[in-house]
Image (spheres, rainbow, N blue to C red):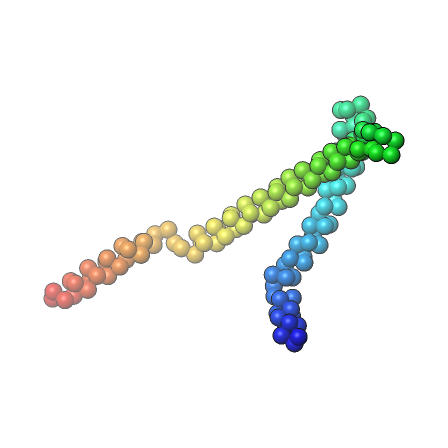
Length: 134
C-alpha cells in the first residue's frame, strides 16, 4: 500500500500533472468566455439574420411526452465549433510567436560568417597535413 501512495505522490508532483491541471482550469475559463461570446454576441447577430429564430426552442414533438430538442443540439454543436476554432487560433498564434522568438534567438547565437562544420574540419585536416610536410 505504501508503494501505491509513493507512486501516486511522484505522479502528482511531476510537472506534467500540474501542467494538465492548469490546462483544465484555463480551458474551462476559456470555454466560459467563448460561450458568452456565442450567447451574448453571435446568437443575437444570428437572430437578426434568421428573423429572431431561437435555436434552443427548435424541437420536434413525436408524442406529447416525447420531444426531440434538435435546436439545443444544434446550439451545442455551434458552441463546440466556436470553442474549437478559438482554441485553434490561440494556439496557432502562440506557436507562431514561439517560432519567431526561438528562431531569432538561434540566429543571434550563430554568426552568419561562420563556416559549416564540414568545411572547418577539412581546413583543420589540411592545415595538419601541411604541418607534417614541413
